Image (cartoon, rainbow, N blue to C red; front, side, top):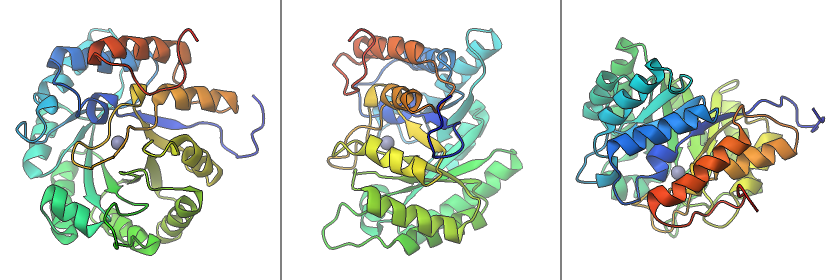
Length: 306
Ligand code: ZN
């Protein structure tokens, strides 16, 4: 392996395609979504955000999350794919109960660093979201499940005039860890991050929470996801959320743009001598099938047969 000069070469990818990627698409049957989870696991994805336990009325494409988790786990048990750690996104205690019952291995919860975004999109103040997350953490602890707190809008607010101070993001993250969250993922929900801002926020977080399990969830709104990912790698971040085909983005955040594409990121990591454990040929084959599954072209740059 080539020495990249940026240290530890192993990167952890959490594939969020079956959740973030598909949530804005036309609804697919749960069996198709479980097959996608198994396909990702066969391609070497060890961590997959497989379902969301939100209201079916709010996000119809995520209906039947429990069935997706159960079918994927049945596939693992039958030897159809190597076992992957499955995450369920939960918006509230009711969702957490459903995710735990379905057999999720990890829960993810979200709160926005933007007060306006939080109020407009989940109709709660940041304080109300933090209280709900604390309650979810207690429930997850009873079931011995880890909770990853995703702090959305961590690199800027989509609302004019609202500033997101890096120190505020770091303090919010520290409070979430204090309530029992094991990991923090900073999300660039509307693609506002750039290298200097990213460095400020990651540095603030590292000084508030030294040694924290820190991940990044980057969006491609302005074509900067891979650039920001590289800067994060240089800053020592080794965990990233990515989505097959670069699909996704919040259906509630205007102009959210897709996620950093798994195949583009895996290809990039290989090119700089870093590893993700994901097989590039396998993930490209899956991306080609994804076009047929969602019925349109996808935004990723690396193709199986260029
Ligand atoms: Zn996303």
